[in-house]
Length: 244
Image 1 (cartoon, rainbow, N blue to C red):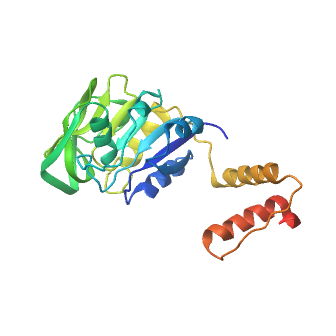
Image 2 (spheres, rainbow, N blue to C red):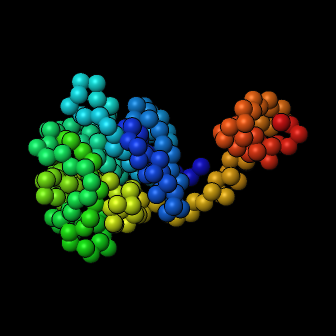
């Protein structure tokens, strides 16, 4: 499979599936994997870009979901959302603190400078959806603030090369007015992806992969009748017919 794809590392957000949906709506393939996925597997997956989801945890907790700092040195563009941004700061040499004002709901964000992530966004300020109790206190080395809100001095941050970025708000939800544009800017302008993926092309690819893997063998499928096994049954039957 082409590396024209986005990896989403899941930190437990209720919106993680929605991030994948937004990327796929833009005709770029994405996969969700746990935030504990080893670096070797991430490198083998060879994503064009990586998105770190939000999550209910605090990076200040002793058993907070981790981020391997080496991931930030892979040379692959990374977008951290909410907890993902705080993880970039906390594990990347900055610091996070409990916010004096917990934000949940609509907020307005002011851009501090022009940035590729905000290209084409004309509203100043623009409306976003916040959901956080912590905030970035000290930026990681080499980072700068690129947007702020009334209660969040660092609503967005970027490194010098604009390859590592973080958003305290959620661009994947419809409440953020320019959220889809922000995701589009990340995957196309910053990651260099192409809008070539469709569900039909995914089905064709999977059928060929099944044929290649099975060859002349037979396959036994345990069918529960649920969505996953039913879809698997249809794909395998299309691929190998009576060998199933």
